[in-house]
Image (cartoon, helix red, strand yellow):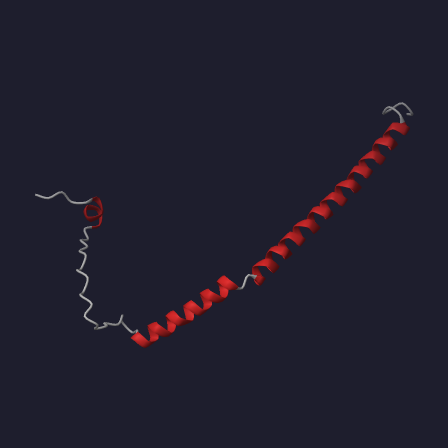
Amino acid sequence: MTPIAPPVLITGLVFEAAPAPADGGDYEPAVGTSREEKEILAALEDKAAAKTASDYQHIVWAYGILWALFAAYGLFLWRRSARLRADVDALRQELGRSGPAGAGA
């Protein structure tokens, strides 16, 4: 008796690897795909891959825009914190001028 592998035991499915066909120059197309279609698709994929690999201008622009947005947001937060700090200082001065709470009442 041979031990059963866990995937086979759980699913009950048995998979057998088919032997690789000898390449005698005969081409058996995939279902619904001819050799010409596969060659055209491979050529288009190669052309797109070459364009993407050689044309980095869009990547540079994307990073530039992201860094510009990041810098603008950082500048906005810095200016906002300066305004809030000024408001808090003004409130502290106002509280300091009015004296201790309840002293004037």
